[in-house]
Image (cartoon, rainbow over the protein chains, first blue to last red):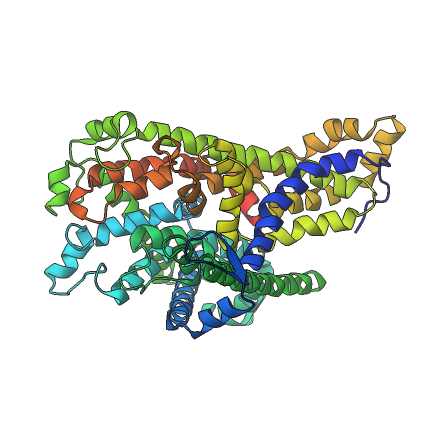
Length: 293
Length: 283
């Protein structure tokens, strides 16, 4: 798609593009290629020189159980957060889409957590579930449940899942609501006249028409869980206990900084880049289809 | 909607939505209560859901004095850093992406599509996957512990350029032809026609990018080493010490409330722009 007419000037457009291109080259392409480059190298013990080692960093990575553990952790974490936040948001959006009093107020009260930083969301939940002084944690312990996310990896996982889900509901809610409101009311009314009950109307009309939105949100949520939840994990558990909440992204950070294994960290970065590129490609295929539809 | 409903089905949405609002608001309310208590009440686990009487004292100390532990910075200074970072990212991104989108849409020049794709591909490279190399470049440029180092690497991204490109494509060609007949050049056309038409899009992008900038975590965590360059989101993390006895929870919760206030206020006060910005930048 192009404009019918255009200005003819050789230098002005390049000048206008220059700031964007310079920043992109310096802070995107250069570091990304550095990551690829250093993923093929290892540093010596003193960190003074590096040596080309081919795919060794990758081989080491795929032979360490810790990497598979991080994969499994990421899989569990992203599946749980995506499923919970999407289904809760869908339920709320369906309810808010009805003609009820105060729908606007409900909407306002449901969307603002979008503005809460992931790290802050983590801190809020940690404050309630901190084993010795958290309000909810004390309630749990009072009921005889041995709640201690600082020692128990599964409980730590539950806590980061809850915090990450809490933070993401508002985003999904907003998009589901927009999707629902785009469905023509006449469709639903005619189905009602034909005698379809509300549940049947939802599953045969509303849900199929909402599926593009749901698919879009699915991809966005996976990206969110992969990258944006870093702050939640770092604030709540720091990847622990015993690496139970170390996701792939957290591992890149922890290995590069604390471990000082820059080559291995870079190899992990490169793998993550491929995952993001694959997800983006999936998303664009879907966008194209929607345009044709 | 269509048929008359049983009272239960009329009540159901209110019940479910109230429950949703409750779940969403509860952790924030607990944090607020925490920010009104004294240290011992929290440390002894005697906290209830009723606010205490130390609110003024806690907020005063947090804003102007700071915690006695790790950060030692008044939170007001951290909020200033966050504000500068968020504003620089938001305004910087709008400026560089609106002019680059203008170049791509309204000019024909060699390598036009190449330039567009070069920008477009960066959608796929979140800062997290290239964190250490980017850190090294910023360090080599001497930009650690500077506002430029905090903001500039996050300014470049394809979202803004794509959004403006999409919007410019919807501006009728006749407007450009008319202004060319009137003898206006590209700069005049941009200032007199394109910019005024883009105001809503600019505002919507601003709202989203301000929140994005304010809430940054990993990047400022890495590149700020001096206490006085910390942003508030980093500051609160540093207040929570692993040995919990040292954590001044009432001040940490006060900081949490203060950290949430600006972006949440932006969402609530500019709700229409926010919704629009969110839906459009994600397309």
